[in-house]
Structures are given as C-alpha cells and as structure tokens.
Length: 342
View 1 (cartoon, helix red, strand yellow):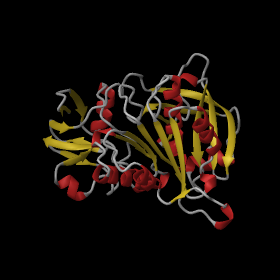
View 2 (cartoon, one colour; view 1 turned 180 degrees about the vertical axis):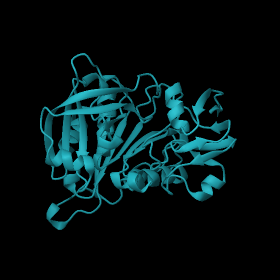
View 3 (cartoon, rainbow, N blue to C red; view 1 turned 45 degrees about the vertical axis):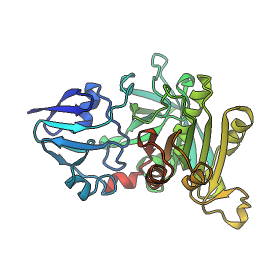
View 4 (cartoon, rainbow, N blue to C red; view 1 turned 180 degrees about the horizontal axis):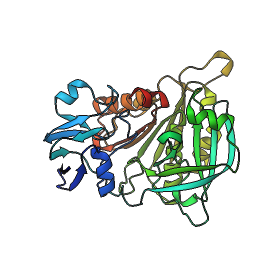
C-alpha cells in the first residue's frame, strides 16, 4: 500500500510505502526534511502531523515525549503513515544536491590525537569523488546491517583524503575495532552524504560555532569551507570539553585565531583537575556563549556534540538570548548506547 504525504507550508508531495518511515521516503523523493541520527534519538526531524495518522517505532523519550505526540508532533525518522497524511516541516534547501552513494574506502592513516580520540583518514577510489556539504556525515556499513555515523572533519574542497574524528566508547562495536584491530589499508564501506547540518552560504550573519568533544569535527569542516569561500562573516568558535585534553586540536584553533581576521576562539573546560593547570574559561560551553553574547538576535548558531549540550543551547539561546529559532542549526552526536536505547 502506498500513502500520499503532503508537506506544509511548501506544498511538496511525495509517496511513502507501508512500513516505511516518512523520512526515508522523503530522502528518496529528494524532499529536504531536516534530520540527524535517523534512529529516533536526536529529535532533529521532529515536526507536526496536521492530518492523518502515523505509528511510531522505537525512539527516545527526549526526542519525542508522549505529551508531544499527543499534542500532534511526529518524529519523521520513525513515524510510519497509516493513511494519507499532511505534515508541517521546515524544508532544508539544497540538501539533496549531492546523491547518497555507497562507497568503499581504504584506511590511509590512524592518528591518535588524545587517549580516546583517533583521526581516521580514508582514501577514496580513484574513480570516486565524494561530494558533500561542510557539516554532513557518512554512515559506515557494518555487519548484520548495523550502521555507525561520523561527520566529515575536512571541507569538501580538500577531500583527497576524508578525515573523521573517532572517540573511543569502550564496548562499542565500531570504536573498539578502530582502537584495537583496525589497520592501515583496511577496506571500509560507507553511505553518504547524510544529514541537514551544513553551512548556510546564503546568509551574511555572524556565526557562533558551538562544539563539545568530537562535535568539533563538522564544525572544523564548516570553518575550513568558509575560509575557502573567502567569507567575511565573523566566526566565533566555542569548544567545550571535560578536561583540556578533550580539546584535541586546541593548537589548530589557536592558529586560526591568530591568522584569520574574522575568527575568534574560546575554549571552555567543565571538569579540570588541579594537575591540569587550566587557566581558561570553565563551566558549560553554551553558558560561555550566553555570558559573552546575551543578544543573539542577529546571529546564526551551528551546534554539534552531546545531545544535552545541543538541547540546552537551543532552549536557552532562543528563550533568553533572542536567537531566532530558525537560525539554530544542530547535529546531536548520539552514541551507540543511545541507539540501542532508542
């Protein structure tokens, strides 16, 4: 059985098969619904159900609560239509510009930059050029149909090698392999590009770039892409970690701050120990933004990292700092544990 999906306010329409999620059908049809994890854990694809009925698969309560669902909200990555439906969602222009492809790649280098972070560089086939937008991610295709998502950490113009920042989660199917048995020249398969988190090039607003941990990876790609395009928009990077070593490319960010005229960098550490000798900002990284920029009404914010940081930043920036809701762009880095729980 096939159902008709209508999107408001754009008026776009597409079809969805029985048992298929609304998001999967939208991606196939080239309709740019916003999304992140695709597993019911991050809430990026949440919208409203205006007419018809859907059935939700497993998802995190924080992504869609029972009260939100009762009030008419839907999580399009795990909502399957039970009738023709009409939804309300803000479409993302340009998201389907590059086709999603399955690509083999060879491990080029494994560079350990901290105790629990490896920069994994992949060599694409000679006949395959990976096209993507700065900020997007790929999904590694693992055994038994499992997938793991990682953002490209290099800008699209420098994609001879694709760079990914992998944090070790002990017991994690993929990260245990990366930190244990993976070797240079191993072959990996992935599908991409994915996601609606990328630099909006049609704006001239100053940018706040907000990262926690390895959420720095797509932010790095966005910065490099903006520099490549010679954009003059002010950029202020706030990068947070529990301890100083979590800011594993701190010196690179300091170099950008010295050499790029429109770039500022504020590192923030939340749980430094006395032996760390940390002299910089402390506390929650999004609160540092609020202290420095109490009025965000004229800004765009790009946030990436732990879901709690992203959710807190969006809620408090909009409610307290006058940030327009539509100028907050985010990618929550859900862990393997999040996906199992979803």
